[in-house]
Length: 468
Image (cartoon, rainbow, N blue to C red):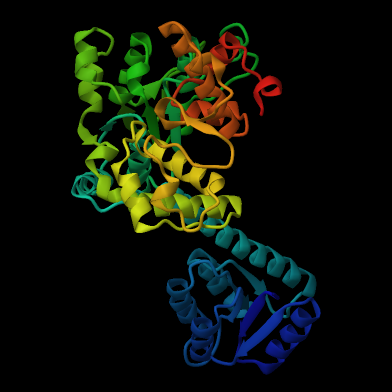
């Protein structure tokens, strides 16, 4: 589809000249002889670019510009200026015009401006589309009373700069709450920087959070900017904050209190303006009693506590979640979007989702892939979370589908053999499910990537040997 350009100018010669040049270059051109006519055309046709004369009888260019900026957020507006209107053109760009071009028109400069403006419009539209997709991906789904309490807390906390502590079981959606707070805050245009404190080894977490200078330790071949600096003017999300060492906790406390930090290997104090949102699946008050979490840091983090309920406490949200995950999977994988019968939804509502929403999402994706039925019915969802398919399968630990060729845990004699065999089968099933992507699998099963690598070595799991 050709980009469409609207020319608003009271001089017919200018309009016709532009129409000829732009159509020759492959653009579709519309014309308006007055400001009022131009405003109506923009409202009706939504052009990709507007050329606007500053000096016109009736509604002049400045008045038209102010009206259009309220009507079309992403449409670039280029103003024409004669010798007597240069200052007005400069003022127009200050008020939001994309650029200005002097009369008589220079064709080369004209085409450069057109290409830049059309590209800018396209990029803004794509960015808006990506944002919509991201917002859908991180959407909080459900209308249960317990979730309404969470939404109310987000609404109250978001506009402030208060530190927020989100707590709840693993897989309940604490990250979604953190992103919602950032998205609705005054820092929404700043960065949202996420740190999984449980996934970073103790010896590296300080470098990740605060950065380091070149040569500050073995392997520090370059300067690294830490996550707190990256989040300046934005939000940092410290996920699984209860897994930080006491030494790191002390440094985080300083950033919270003073809004300043030092990179490893440097004595220079760096000021930062960061909002901190933390999350944990641990009872931090119990961790304080065990002397594994600082009491003063807890009180600094726990300014606004938000509890995210487990899925078992909001079962009525499961049908909406299932439809949401099915839509996302179909869109992201160009997959046929399967539907679920009322009986299937009821069966899913009765299942025990120990892994909460994360487990439900994985199970919905597995249903979409492995079930040939359409629509998916209750008979396709046996108790225990297994999926009926053509190949003989078993419901392994946590409802994970594993192939019958798992002699280690089927034929186990001792309890230890059963534990080892079932854990191996579980990991192989998860790795297969996620295309042997180590990072994705570690995230889904909620374990540090380093720990997953250790398990692969311990059980001698490899893609070559266990792919099928």
